[in-house]
Each structure stands twice: as structure tokens, then as C-alpha cells.
Length: 295
View 1 (cartoon, rainbow, N blue to C red):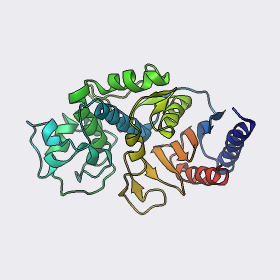
View 2 (cartoon, rainbow, N blue to C red; view 1 turned 135 degrees about the vertical axis):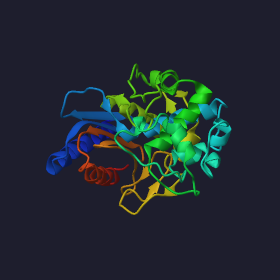
View 3 (cartoon, rainbow, N blue to C red; view 1 turned 45 degrees about the vertical axis):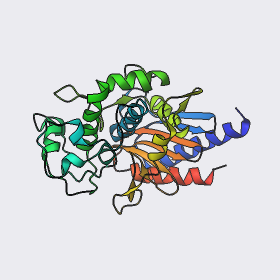
């Protein structure tokens, strides 16, 4: 570690802590990675907590691992995976990529009881029509993607534990599961701030960890380059494979209530929180700070 790197990580941490205080943001934990240096701050005791939609990024990594293993492709269709299903018009042609970038066109929005609203959420998803590539941000889409992956790798939670989490030193991280026993996928993964930060480092380093390439760089790159139009709000105009473009020059994984992994250059800022309304503002502040302190 160099003094300069240490200073930059610490400076970022201190400025973010100041912004959190000024905005009254309900942060729990903060981890800053800049170059090879790290800095941390906590407002509450570090415990595992739901990272909500940041888990979608973990699901993309699971898909990348399975593709590297030759078990599936981004262009594999639902019709190929579930040949006996009763499909709505056009839905058999939806691919794994469409599910992960939220362009399946299937209208099945989030509800607090989504995982138990139907006897089988995936069969409900498959039965609905798809008019083509229409963006809808939906946990049902990620859930169906992981159900497709399940047919090739077995239990996705176990697969991720063995192939991704354990190599990162993350063990026995609990997933919420649906009544049928499948991982919730679009959320429900519980991690500590520092554990989520390890996933952030892996993404920044394009799939490489401790000298080993855990998965191909192309799947990491697609998380922040394979953009589709998603809306008009600042930081919500474009979406890729689990990544949101912005705010500013950054991109991010963004879970409800302020679970954030924000990437810009060689810096990654990981925040866990309990503040849904303040998350966009703190993300914009972090992005600005990362730009101001970039090497």
C-alpha cells in the first residue's frame, strides 16, 4: 500500500461520512476501496442484512459462471429450458439475457407477496404474453432466470456458495427462499457490508480474486456496458445486467433501502443502510466525490 492510496481511500471515507451526516442518511456501514487501499466506517454494529436488489448482481455472476462452464448461454430461450411449459404468446422466445436485463416484455410487477402469490411464480411468468423487448424492472424476471439456471447447475444458492462466495471468504450467507424452496434471486441475500464489498472488488477487478480468475471478464463488463433504455429519472435512464448507469460518471448496483455498490475508475464504495428515500441523493454525492478525487 502507498501513502497516496491510503490517503485517497481515507479521504473518500471521511467525505462520505460528512455527507451522510449532512443529509441525515440512515447508513449502517461504509466500505471504500481505492486502488489497493480500503477504509471503513460504521454507524451500527456489523451484521448480515438483506442487500435487496444488489443480489441481482450476484445472480448475473451466477449466470456468468454457468456460461463459463458451458451449461447455458445468454441466448438460451425459456422454450429450450422449459419445453413442457404452457407459454404465453412470445414468451418461449425470451432469453436468459432478456430476463437479466429486464427486457422480457412480460408484465409481472413486484408485490410484497410476489413469491407466494401463485403456486409457482415461474409458471405464472411463463404463461403471460411477451410483446417483445419492453423494459420492466421485476424480481420475477431474475427469479425466472435463476429457475432456468437451476435446471443446469442444481440449487443456485449452493452453486454460488461453492463457486463464488466461498472463494471470496463468504460462508453460509442465507438466502430467502420461496415456498417451493428456490432462492428469491431478486433480493433476499444477507451479507455484511464487508462481504458485499468483496463482491464489489471482484466486479471492479473483472472477475479476478487473489490472483485467480473466478469468471470471465466479459460478464463483468456486460454489467455496465450492455445498456438498455429503462426510464427518464437521473441515474435510472439505462440498465444493463444488474447495473444502473450513473449517477454522473459512476455506475452502481442498487438495492432497496440504500444498499449501494458504486463503481468509478479504480474506486468502489459500498454502503448498507435503512433509508430508501435518501439513497439516490447519497449515491449522487458519492459519485461526485469519486469524480473529484479520481487519479
